[in-house]
Image 1: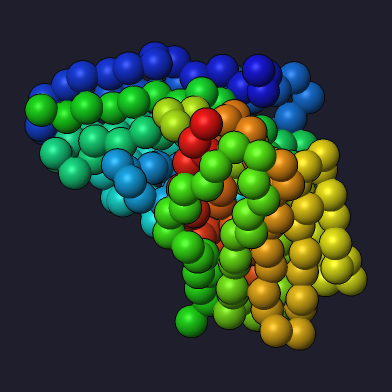
Image 2: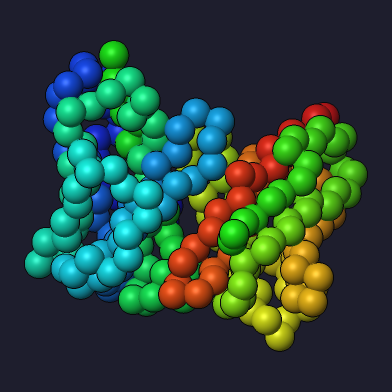
Length: 115
Length: 111
């Protein structure tokens, strides 16, 4: 158990819909990262927040957005969903503000299926 | 272009045997390199992290090596166990703290 929690575990929705994925970091961690992993694909870094502020941006689509709240939990919003958005979405947390500066602890993931 | 390439793509070995996974990168400048283990359907777990000055680092039966001159790293697994069946991902940290992920090596350990 990494100490990072993600909800929901599974999500099934239709094309064109909007969903919100939630992540609670490990106690004491200020950085939250979001990753997308499509079937048989590698991890794709989406975005990082540090203490409520956007810190780094990766290959995140304009239809996707994220935020980190004062209690440090984070939400990833996916809108106008397409079939290709079906994937595992991971959240990770760390204490450092610089990506890769220390160990990232990954949550169990949310499996999104778009029908 | 900053890239991380892993080989082989997949590997099948018998329980008890050793194996070595490769990671070649073109990321420059280089900050650090990390190996992750990812069980199917679960989040990755960090195995080792190596900086420019480190050549070898061990974590139990896992030993990572780094040659910063040739930009190559390897992950050696000794006396494999069924629980080693997973994907192994190499991640390189480059400039501006950008993380470059390899596509992983899928290892299957058979009894």
